[in-house]
Image (cartoon, rainbow, N blue to C red; front, side):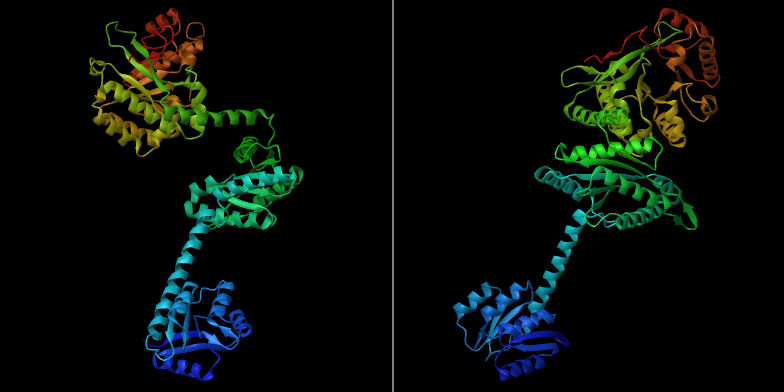
Length: 563
């Protein structure tokens, strides 16, 4: 041991004994950096108040003081200072009792040989305890704070909302809650990268923290979204503060590497009253109000009202999320099929489009138009697409006769699944595992989804076709530049949008569009499929045009897959 520094508080009434102890420590190569000797409760309390001690050594028996009282004072001060009793007269039973009360060790004055080792051990353990407490404090902080902005996190805000609602009910109080969503965050992130986006979030967080009251709770909910609980604040007062925050964000100039960006924030506002149903509803209503603010032009404040039709629509969509997840978990999604027949060869095999249906809790069948919009808005399409792929592959793997003779099964995919880097691997793994012939599968995506993700779509189609599957472009003709993109998309089938097909008998423009799509598709070497064929006359017009395939209620309504 060399040059160990020690800040020592010594409780000892005998100055001679104190000098002997200090001499022993010096011989043991301890450097006393700071030292005080006390011999009464008052002097010890004063020393504890003034000093930052590494160790307390206390005699047991002193005229007006003893080790038991010293331990009590140290613990009263919430101190974690190790305490070693060094005494000339202490029985073993009493020594054990003192150690139970918090003493680290006891040593006899006439045998100080192990004092140095005891000090070294206790200082090491004290350091370990301090490090452990620091780590626990950090974990506690991380559990309730956002690591990027150091604001409260969503978990803490949700608990605070519950507490605010409880106080409103108990004390008949009125509070308010704001839901904030930055308007230009994606532009910064996409243009300059995540480092720029993170810096913008830090700056906005500091700006908001400076503006809200000390009694308010500001939290980052995730991404570019924040929440503020305004305690004892009416809706009218909250609206004034919300507009003040909005103006502050709007006037903030964010610059990244000399490039300036404008900022704005949309704010949804809701009150917290004794009649509020739950903290979840408060958060949901504020979120809906924020969505309304964005929908009405962004950079504005919108106060939630139960009568707001737009918010009611958003509420319905959010309720569908729960229903979709429940149906997935409970196995209440079903596959239907609708035949696709050849208009050129009556003996050609019938293809089929695979369609998704939901079964309600009462057994009713729910069409996709009711739940797909919500699934698209709230990022559930990837989960639904994977369910469809796995389910139809499982079905076909058990019915190999359906995969013979050129029969194709058309499977709809969403644009979000095309952007999922793991989706192709999932298809490939399921196809191999369930032994589904690739030649029996044709994936399809809408023209709009394909164009919105053109590069990703082209790459995905190449991979799918290399595997042996076919690909179809659905709802073709609805885009402003449908034909200009056709050369870029290596598909096998064009499905003519049903809005044109339904009017092909009486509307010359629709008939001309269908004819043009069919002709250009054939020039490109593609097969054409007309959707929404509902009448025999439509069937005949399409057949005369030379369209290859047709599907619709006039041929067959969708029906459950045969079990």
